[in-house]
Image 1 (cartoon, rainbow, N blue to C red):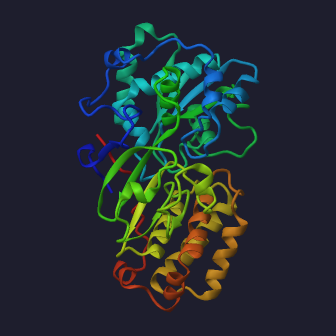
Image 2 (image 1 turned 45 degrees about the vertical axis):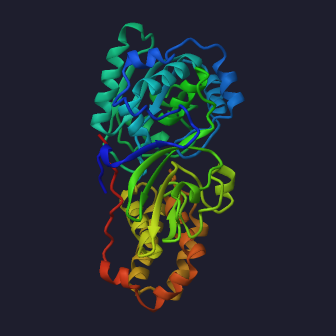
Image 3 (image 1 turned 180 degrees about the vertical axis):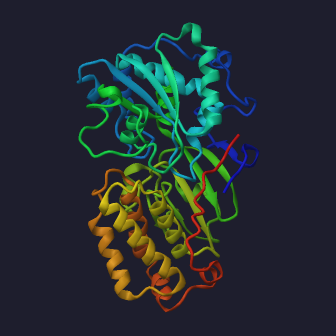
Length: 409
C-alpha cells in the first residue's frame, strides 16, 4: 500500500496544543522555525530530566531511555550515538514523517543525547533516500553551530535492518543483519565503542522534554485499513483505540503494534498504555494499527503477515528459518482450507516454543501473530478447517506479501 502525504491525515488529539507533529502551515520545519520556537537550547542535567519523565523508547521495545543512557555512560569512552530511523514495520510512517517534516526536532534530540553520553561521532541511520536528503539538508542549515560530527548512513530497507545489532553491523561495513547477543550495542557497538541507539521519535521527545515543551506522555500512531485513509496521529497514553477510530461496529479487529502485537478481536476498550496492552498478550510496538473491516478475514490477515515475516527472515538462525516457514505453510493452508486440526496443534506448539530463540524479534513477531489468531479468533480458525471463507476463496492459495511500506512525501 502506498500513499502520498496529501492522502495521510496528520492530526493531534484534541487538547494537545503542541507536540511532535508540525503545524499545518509548515510543510517542513526549517532551522529558523525551530530556533524561533526555542529549539537547540542548552540544557542542564538531561539524564535527570529523562529519568523524571519516565520516557521509554519508541522503537518497539519501550526500554526506559534514562536507563539506556546510564548503561552507555557506565562504559569507558569513546562512545557513539545513533538515531535509528530505519522504520522496519511496513505500516508505520511516524519516523519518516519526523525526519521529513521536523528534522531539527530529531537532530536536537540527537545533539542532546550525544552531549549527555560524551559521544563523538553521531549517526542518523535511514533507509529512505528522501529522508536521508532531508537530514543532510537540515544538517547543512546548522553546520556552523554543530559541535558533534554527524553522518547520515543509508541502508536498504528490510524488516530486520533497524534491529540494533543489524544497525551496528551495517555501519561497520557489514550486511544489515542481526547478530547474536551478547554483546549488545551499549557494550560494544559501532567500531567496538559503547553505542547508544535511540529511535527517531524517542529523540524528538528528548528535545521536547529538554525545552520544557513536552513530557513524553504522548505517542505517534499510524492507523490504516478497513477503507480508512492512512492517518498519523499524536495521542495521549491511556486513550482507547475505539475512541480514536470512532464507530467500530463495522470492524472485526485490528493488528496491533505493526506486526509485533498480533491480531486482536476486541482492542477497542483497552487503554493504549504499555502494561494494559501487554496484559492482552499483545504490545504497542511501533504503535501502528491495521483495522480489519467486516469483509476482512483475520485468518487471511495473520497468514499474510506471517508470510511477509518469513520472506523477510535474515535466514541466519535455523530455528527462525524452520519455524517461520512452518508457521507460514500452516497458515497458508488454513486460509484455503487444506490445513488439518493436527497442523493447527503443531502451529500452537511453535508459538509456545520459539519466542526468544532468534537473534532478533522477527521470530517472536511471527509466533505472536499466529498465537493471537488462535486465541482471539477460534471460531474463524475452526470454520477454515472445513473450508475457506468467501474472501479467502477469492484470494486464492498463494501468499501475497502485501505488507508494503507506506510512502510519504
